[in-house]
Length: 190
Length: 138
Image (cartoon, rainbow over all chains, first blue to last red; front, side):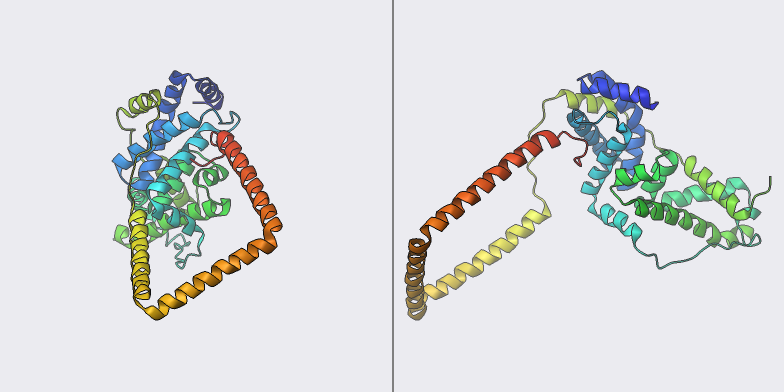
């Protein structure tokens, strides 16, 4: 859904058109559910959170600024509810900015590069397994960035984090994936 | 096109992240939302969390200690006499203070009352308007 169409739906919903709000729910329920699912790692809790987020959005819609992005506002409600459900998540997210003791960087030489020797498909499958195993705070960041096409600033707003923490978190998540590939290099080439 | 191994890995990571399968939204989610927004708002559920239990426990222990202490004091004639003297002295102090500071006390109470009233009005305005603002965290 493009922004203009979304804005129009939001305006209609603000005037009390529940049908327009239904279209917004339809458009965003999938992604909002995935954000909640990555955060709380439980499908029932994620469903409850998304349902509650939409209900809260409906109730607060009158005060929503039409020039703002609806999805940013909605996902922020979702993330806030996840934080309430799982206080541990908030602590872990804040900790993203803490200095990381581990500084394992994959070998930068062409000989040491694992991906160079393997089929793309095999590496992609391995990477997707690794993404699934990442801690939830990283998964939420990566989901918003790469599948939600959110800017760093938008993610910072959604997750109520400083911009630097978001950048560090995403960088660190990618480094973890690279490290995982590097660690499995030997096994693959064997 | 030749690319460095690092760039290739970066591209593969980008692709893996982009193509990572998303779970479909649960069936009936939209219907449940639409049903709920059509209903009148329910009253908040009463729920006891662990904080409530912990606070109640701490409060119970403090009250228990206080009662035990008071019972010991009330049984001892020495402590009872000291308590009576202290109460008399304290009430005298209060009376003296009120006699000497009646005007300033009244002014202080009036100022505190006005400030409290003003804060209550401001809080009421804030919650009436800002509660519906998107700036307020949900």
